[in-house]
Length: 508
Ligand SMILES: Cc1ncc(COP(=O)(O)O)c(C=O)c1O
Image 1: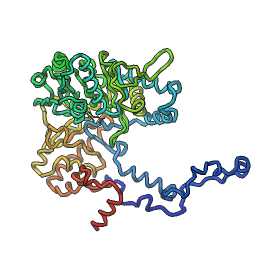
Image 2: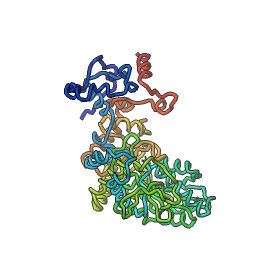
Image 3: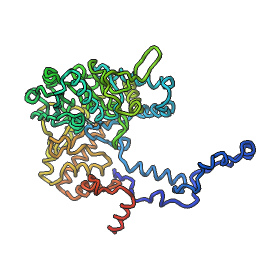
Image 4: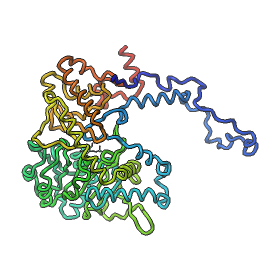
């Protein structure tokens, strides 16, 4: 199938504009009404009338519809093709959840409305909190954090304040594995901790032996992702957790990869003290391009008084936003978090139920292992491969391919775009050279997994036969290969259309 994205070299709306063209027609003002209420224009106070019309493009309705539809097609989305961006859980987002979250009776609520008028929404949020407690084995959740990273920051602040109140303020080291997502060390550092890196073992996990060498009386806690970013279950959790607790530290569970564990194990039962879940990933929300998200944080009973405000509580009088959390770390998000994302999570959990959620994880693991099996082993090698199966995602290294042909992981990722599929995550985790990290999720069919593998394998074959074809890709997307250096540095980024025009004129 030839895939071709919409191109970007179409005129802008202001270039299409023709004086006097309109995209709407308003009915004439009924003379009878006019005679009763007068000229409606006269109802607007003079001070609020414009002297001249606003400078807006003048267009027909189809021109506007086409413009925005074309723009929407210049982006990639899970509704267009497979999107196995590792660690991001880009699963299909059920439309029923979207429909419910967009219901005007929910979507049109105003955050300053009186609580008595939003009882239904508060009830849903309250019930979602109970469900998250059940799923994770924690005692209370704050639904406020707007993303996983913010959840981590909240967890680190709770840890800090709790230890201070216990007279353990001198504990200032947070242990973080070298396979962790970059947000873990960043959140810990933002909360004022020194980050101590734990090296992964040959099996790609945190061992009790490695942890023991680093745990000391300075240890405030450990942030652990399970399964970790290599897609491997941390088999020594119980021993590691015990050691951190003996040192009076806090165990933080990065639940961004919870999609692999639903219904199997609960972080609370594994003795974690604080948990965040990326509900936008595990419980399905369209979240590409940086948002919106939600990263609820759950804690065990002894930490519940530190949660951010407000919580949603229930009394005989109904549901209320509860600001009386005695040692709260305070506000971390305006109003009550990203409610529309939280409600999608509610719908997703309710529509699948307990058994359905377990099947989600089973199938996510199966898809990931099937895709891994189909890949060309000579081109893509599996690091930390000690016979243990991968969970919902896996990481391969394109080092063998690079050595043989010069084509690297970044080139493979660009080339796959030309097949109408999104690339895996590249160059993460940092401990794998030429990393390609794929998370196909449970929502792909066997056929699409097979098609994906066959395209990735076709690219490795082409790398030997015609490497230029690959280094020139992507060719079928709206924009070709970007200059990654210029795209990353503010001083060289082109941020407005006039500058692009100037560049194009100079190039001509
Ligand atoms: C393992 C892990 N931790 C934390 C995060 C951060 O989550 P967010 O992007 O919602 O801030 C991610 C994001 O993908 C992740 O994969």
